[in-house]
Image 1 (cartoon, rainbow, N blue to C red):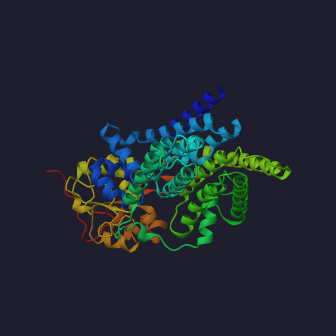
Image 2 (image 1 turned 30 degrees about the vertical axis):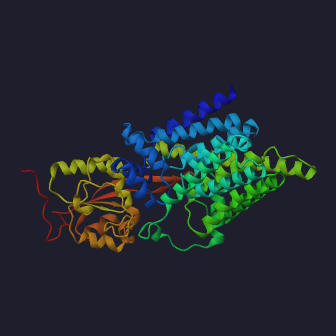
Image 3 (image 1 turned 90 degrees about the vertical axis):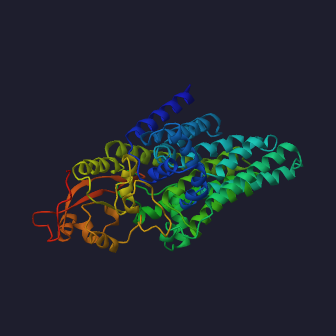
Amino acid sequence: MAQAAAVTAYAAWVIFVALHHEAWFDEMQAWLLARDNGLGMLVGHYARYEGTPALWHVILWGAVRAGLPFSGIWALSAACAIGGAAIVVRCAPFPLLLRLGLLAGYFYGYQFSVIARGYCLDLLLVPMAAALFSTRIERPLRYALVVGLLANVNVFSFLAAAVMGLELLARQIAARRIFQPPALAALALAGVCGLFALWTVWQPADNGFLAQAGPQNPLAAMLLFVANALFDRVTVWSAINQAGPEYGIAILLSVMLLGQIVRLAMTGRERALSLALLAAPILFAAMVYSEPWHAGVFFVLIVFVLWINWDNPVIDTDDAQARRILIGALVLLEVMQGAQTLHSGIEDIDGRYSAGKPAAQAIMAWRSGHPQGRIAAFGMQSFETQPWLGRNEFANYHGGMPTPQYVNWATSEPWHALPKPAEWNQLLTTRPDLVLAAQIWLPSAMKQDPQRAACRAGYDVAQVFAAGIIWRGVVIDNPLILFARATSGPCAKPDSRPAPSPA
């Protein structure tokens, strides 16, 4: 009864917050790609530019054709999260309070459940793999299927699936089952899924998004990755992101907890698998690329490692003491992340995560009075309007052609989703009648005083659409600004003329 009540309460929270959430660029981009492309082009071409295997895009492709509107995309992530939560509550070997606390954790409680991105699949597939782990030798096929699907979620999941698949191969060899039909079928299935994921994620040479990723300090990247998965700061209700001494304390707490998890793993027979699952994502984040939300995949993998090692024998007093310390640290983690979950949900309910829908409404209202007017877009967040527009309205994107409506990351694409500030002035020299700009990509002077800077260029600030993405309860301003070419008044330029009106 308590388990059912907990899952029901969790589902109610996720659904309630998701109903108030406005999907932003990353959610929109995947949906538009799935909507506007055939399955072959989606999987074989566009998904690799997104830097991910294509499972999430395939799910979206099917959901769109089944009639799911963009406004309902949250239902997919919520369903995955609730399914994963039910598995954790029912099957995980932890004490009940720890199981319930995991649902309040930031990635289960908000980031991967409310925000509809492919990472929601980790919330479902990793607990599935953990629940099937103990029977993977005798019944390998279903475990291999889950591992194969996991390989197709994201790059970090692919690394984890590769480790799990190799471990399954080693166990089947050690058990002398390698030539039995179930083992051969399971290994073949996992291998094919892994190769398919590798093919879909293999990066094209002209991917302009990854070209924007600058160099990083490997040690700093590792510490940040671990902290973002566990304790990211001490003042968990703060509106300011990690910085200063509290960031150092958070890193120390995270490293100490990770050390206790490693110690637990070293007491059992799954040492090699556990250490590889923990090390691979950290090393990838340090040496290649990562964003803060990628640490959520690491968090879910930590749950997997705890799950498969929880029943390791307690041999002596030191082991018993270490187990108590580990449980206490996990309780602290769940409480602190739970506070961030609550804070994030409240901010999402009260605020606006994306300005795309109201900006799209303003564009269409202006378009009705200026059917021949030229509208330009600046910065990728301006494309958050595209799901709400019947066609592409931006004259500087593919010449105003009705399609495509998604961002193309190829370096040959003339419209830059991640523009340099100098490109703003270049855009204004073309004298569009209306410009929808993402504030984050504007030059510094324009950010500091948009009205004055716009006036010097011959434009007025027509409307500002407030929005803020949320990370661990911290709201990061992400507004859209609508600039209109001034045709009269102090900001008008000699060459300014009114946009054509309806006949």
